[in-house]
Image (cartoon, rainbow, N blue to C red; front, side):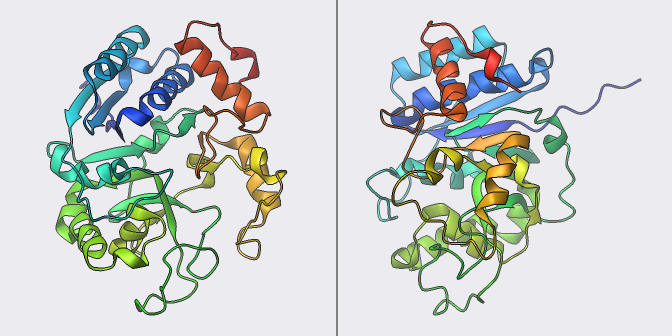
Length: 296
């Protein structure tokens, strides 16, 4: 019997500011694939990492048994918009077709995610001709039901068109090249920098032009429970995605996404199960023990 084809690689893109979160993510991947970690591969898009950062990632990969390769990524256009909590490295994922030309498919994960379930079913998921598989953005699920893509009406984008979060994307690179998906995203950023609220995510939604496979929320579940009880929390899309359902989704999540400026590795992040889980992976990384008892 012939061996099955290797699974598509996981891909992350970081600069030095996200080395610690990436290392925690790597530990969560290893924990979720105990006994099967040898089936996975990770490609890290290196946005100017220091030598010490690369050494730490490579050391962790060896300890965890996660085959990992670091590849230099081109510097994003300095004219692309950023914010006080997002650096230009957010655009590193737009270089995936250029930096990873040999792979037909990849699974992109933001470094601020935490894997709690087996990713292999998603890695094997057919895309049915779509260039990208993704999950509706929990707080901006459709144009006009959130704060994504300001000026959408002047761009000719219809209200109510569904909008995906780019923090987890199953990508058919051959299909993307044929449709020029990533080239169109770059073009949008160059031509409309003032109409971008969520950086590459806005650009990719425009470029995909509603041609994307809808994945189940479990593959990109926002960590909303730590934030929902905080003063000033606003869920803009209650009419489209009720907060009660989004909070329930956390119980079945395979990938938790700490989207937004509040991160679980920073001081002041709200206490709760998700923070404790994440801090457990940081503790393992820093040699302070683990919190395996908190896992489902």
